[in-house]
Image 1 (tube, rainbow, N blue to C red):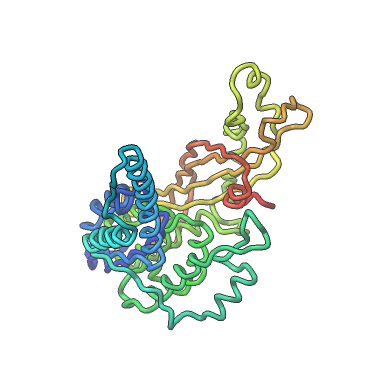
Image 2 (image 1 turned 135 degrees about the vertical axis):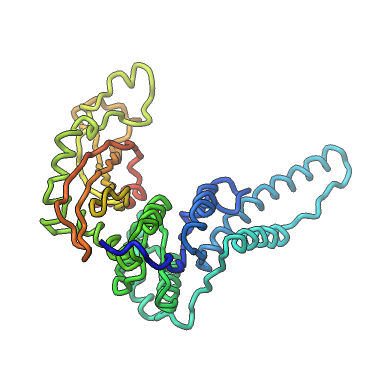
Length: 385
């Protein structure tokens, strides 16, 4: 195994997408979960935050828009009072002031997290390639779910170019981290930066924290970087019959052992009372299915070589209401369902990073989610074809 004595973890440049920082409570600069994560982990490894200009701008726009909407209501209220009292009432607040104050709030928060705004590297972007990708809907561009004639993804493309510039221009000893919950953008970034061994993309803060836990083990930094990538590929590689997911028949085991959970138990938001009593799961049949392999997280190290991991597996399904069932005209014809699983597995890892004696320890059922079958949801869950 790697030597116990090792160098401290290297500096980490942490780049985040909007979906990691966003919070519905616009009074907060960013989500409380992110602040909790940062406060808990920044003492453990050296981290500096880099927020792409587009991400910072999106937060600025969202929070400003929310405040301006409230201001509009207040202005209407003052006008109503003036009409009732036949007296002039007004306030001094305006949109420009709100915009400036929201920006100052975000900048103060960012400074407190050893962070900075990563400016869009306009001069370094191959704009001809970006235009070509937009025309042909190449990732991170994609078809607009509402209108297949349109494309979407320009903001994601700019974030990607910013990320690539940061990663490739950083000190070779630094590790670049991208935390992004958008599947297409995250996987596209991994493809663009696959030649850079000091780059990792995580889909959630929990995944990133699992990596940080791995850095706290008595392992060399080089070994940590190696094993993190190997663990993902050991569990799943598309088309690889030797990866654990395929070789150990994980999908088949899930479908056999959790067959009841994979049925559409709840038709969703249907009317209650007598009408709902005639609707049963038998009225729904599966039309499409997609298995989504999520992240692989380090759990613990037992002894010197037995590494334990957990990998997320989502079964995404599109159900259609059986035409032979009751016809009411107000029930949804399609329904989406996501059933989440946690696959716990272990492997003996040699000093050269190779995995041996891989075994599935257990498979746990997670949350089940139902959604309306809107074009956006069908596209997001990759059930459009």
